[in-house]
Every structure is written in structure tokens, then in C-alpha cells.
Image 1 (tube, rainbow, N blue to C red):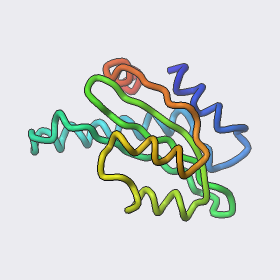
Image 2: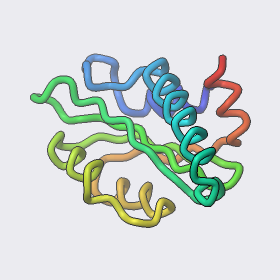
Image 3: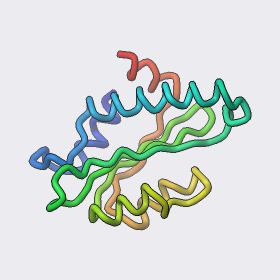
Image 4: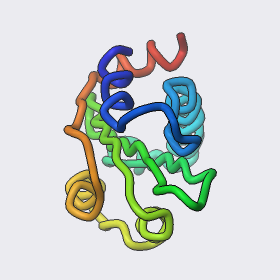
Length: 131
């Protein structure tokens, strides 16, 4: 999906091991969606609630971590990429995130270097994931 490729390209050059690749993002989203479907099969009250996830690439602790976040809301998925100090990105991912999923991308943009958001139709994202 070209819009996601452009999002990753806006992170800068590919010279760092901490840069997520398009295949990384596709695999992460596929795994996340599969897990989410299994959860909502068990807990149907969660099915229509907004939700989010964060992929963090921090393989080299000497460099800033880079991330891709996604918020699923209704029939849309909105992605944001960015980077920041490894410890701060990890703290956000583990327990410093907002309770409301719709606030996650704004908070990431406020706290870290971030790209513009890219919003895609959920069904288009699914087709891309399934290749």
C-alpha cells in the first residue's frame, strides 16, 4: 500500500536497524488483526470499540526507537509513524498512553517526532495485509 510506504519513507533514510520495513508493518498488522478478531469472538462487547496498537523498532539501543501506531475506529484505520528516545517510547507503549484510543495519535505527535497521519479504509487495509 503506497500510502503506508510513504509514511515509512518519511521517517528518513533506511540506514538504521530501528526503521520498520513495509514487511514488518504488514506482519504486525496481520498478527494484531488476527488477535483482535479472536478476542472479539470471545468478548463480543469489544467488537465495535475503538482500539489501537504500536509497533516499536528499538533493536539498537544506541539509536532512537522508531514506531508505527494505528488506531482502528469504525471502518477506518489511521496510522502514524515517528521516533524518539527508546526509553520514552517504551514507557508510552507500556503504561503512559491515554485511556481513549482516539487520543493516542495526538499524544504520540505531541511527545515525539511524528509524521502526518494516514487514514485508510479498514477493508483496504485487510486486503493489503492478506496480500
